Image 1 (cartoon, rainbow, N blue to C red):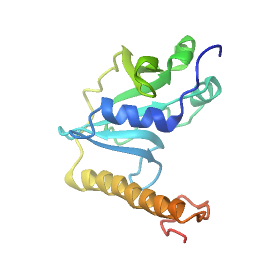
Image 2 (spheres, one colour; image 1 turned 45 degrees about the vertical axis):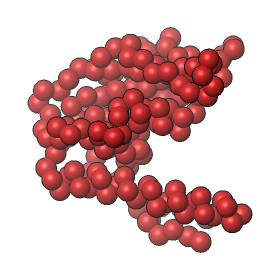
Image 3 (cartoon, one colour; image 1 turned 180 degrees about the horizontal axis):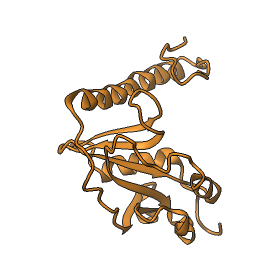
Amino acid sequence: MPDMERLTTIEIEEKLARFFNYRQNIIVPNISWGFYIHECDLLILRRSGHLLEVEIKVTRADLKKDQRKEHGHIDHNNRIKELWFAIPEYLQDSIDCIPERAGILVLSRNNDMGPHLNCRVIKEARVNNQAVKLCLDEKLAIARLGTLRIWSLKRKIIDMKNGRKRKRINNKNQLKLFQ
């Protein structure tokens, strides 16, 4: 990858949160439990009650590996209205690995404005007009999963300030924070 600095997943997540407007929508990273859905890199709950899924890929190998996922980014409860893939511009030559129904967002570093990223749509997502809106309990479950992230991050900041390392949590269902 000549002359292009690799983008990190966390940089892409932050840019996508702004792109999809976290002030208007509930945007939750890394949903893997608690909502009875396959693992989602970003799940976006729109005010309309519809969900969008964004799959983030930063390497060619991960993009190719995604094709072998059993779930195929299909929610068996039919709650996903749009599927998007977000990739760095250096992976544009691998878009044939992305499902046909998925929209494609390409991110690149904006060298004129420091560390900021640009995000552009190169293909719109195919809209699932059969997708059902979330009920109130499902909306609250998504919001709850999002707020769980806040307290984990605050604990991490406190621990970093105090020079402590956190113990690694190996069980995804384990919510207890270690000190």
